[in-house]
Length: 248
Image (cartoon, rainbow, N blue to C red):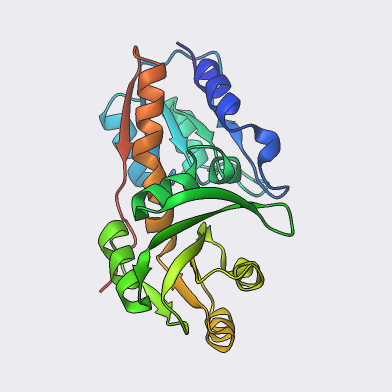
């Protein structure tokens, strides 16, 4: 099997044209004609992921966050891209197209949270979120549930009513609070929420939960690894999910 075979399959599941305009997805480093016997699935292609890939004999890394997002002005010793090229490791990145696709990040987050009646919800800008139902929870109970299911810290505001209907956006989704409010959801679960967005949620009386960027997105790594392993039995896929950003 070659890098281009894995890329083609991923793009059939998560078409590049479903990614946001700002995004950079697909084969970002390496050679599509290169053979693959082992691959690593991870959220970010950082120095730890590259070292892990090398230690495990992998010459392909599949990431959620693009290893190259903005144009590069140089590729020099010490940079991740330089090291990847030097080590002969290719990188495929599936970002916002993986967020919105069937079985992608938002679906994986809903599954991790145990939500039911999962449905797509198209935001005003065309971005695809997910909605779902949960057993009736008070805001503090749902916060504890999110912490238990995802790990990490949870920041939240307590709305005026018990929670059953939920809008979900993995990663940085604070800008979609107005969607949750206008559509009448009891709560919105996302990450990277800014202070003024929390204040807006308090004023609107809606429960807003920030489960952390890593925790709301890392839930896709294991499921994606399983999907790829089932499709490409000759390649050894390994999930790599270190939480490198520490909290005290």
